[in-house]
Length: 120
Image (tube, one colour):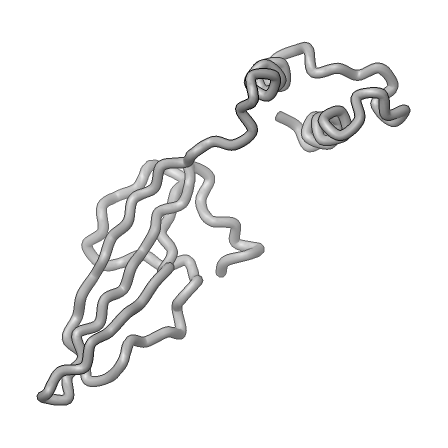
C-alpha cells in the first residue's frame, strides 16, 4: 500500500468522518482486505522469526558493542531475500579458569529487513 493509503487508513480508523478523507473509504485492493480483517477484530499480526544462539569461550565478559545492531552470525542459516539478522542478546558465565562462556543471540527480521534508520 502507498504511504497515502496508510495515511488515509489511519485517519479513517480514528474518525471515518474526518474532512481530510474527502469521502475516502477503504473499499479497494489491499486496503479493503485490511479493513475486512480490522472489522473482525484483527489489529496485530505475527511475523515469525528465527533465533540463532552462538556460544564462544572468550577471555572476558560478552562484547556488547554490536548489541542492537544489524549483524550476521557466522554459519547462520540463509534468510529469505530482504531479511537480515540483528544481535539482540548477550550473556556470559565466568569460569574458574578466568575464561568466559559467552552466548550471543541473533534474531531474524521480517521480510523487509531491520529498519536501518533505527538499527545500524
